Length: 360
Image 1 (tube, rainbow, N blue to C red):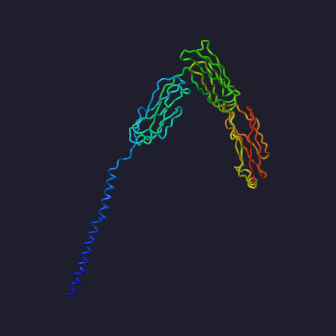
Image 2: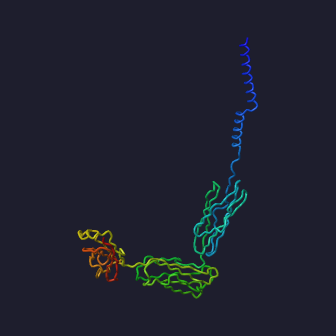
Image 3: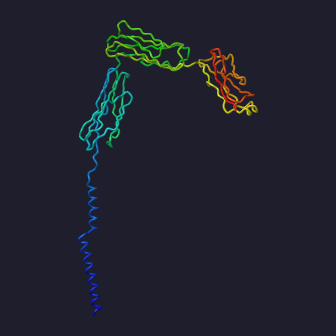
């Protein structure tokens, strides 16, 4: 009887513990609550509205100003609407050469309108022009787009053949001339009151018609103009009510017809003992080339060297036009730096070529 009573008591305790556990779970259902919270969060993410984005709408990307008078300034407002729900940001406005952006709205609120104001100064242009502006925004669909201004620039004072003329390649000693014919296209008289020249080596002459409807401007390139580039800019001051200044340009290059290459001679990596043992080594030779680019007519009369151990030998490439001078450094030589010059006397002029090197 005692054993049976103990078994019944233990079973009662076990059942009571199970019952208490069930009551506790019912009162605090942790796992089901966690699952419900996770599901609620996922549902919230799914129903959250998308981020607000701007939407740039440009009413006009190309503006044609038609025919304008040279010297006028073309100004135009490009209208930009924001039809999105986010703020539109204009992050970059980059004009091309000849076009200036005076101002633009950097931010445009949703439902609002902004402007990009561009200007083109036509004083330096003639005929059809096409200027562009690159724009960048934070609208993904209009991240980059282009605006343009077109026009036909009409000159009141017409210049023929053109305002920029090229002398081309000119050899020293040659003289040339360029003529600019200037005419009034609107019938209004004008006078050229003064001329400003950029290159004082260029000469000019001005003659004006008696009816003040035209003028002739001549630019003379003298034979003694220095060798180098020709950058002649002439600014003409006029009395025309719409054209206060007129710029005429000449350009080109003047070169000496007698070319010498190289301009100097340098001996490098010379060893005294090796030179004395190998007097005919190729490293001891250098070559100077002389050419007359205006055709036959060049004669080399004499070649001398200030260095006693540097001998020169003249070889003909093209008779009376192109020659080579072989320079040979012959032993015995001394240690250290050396310098001198080779003088070539021709029937055109005398040229001097520096020579230097080092013996170790």
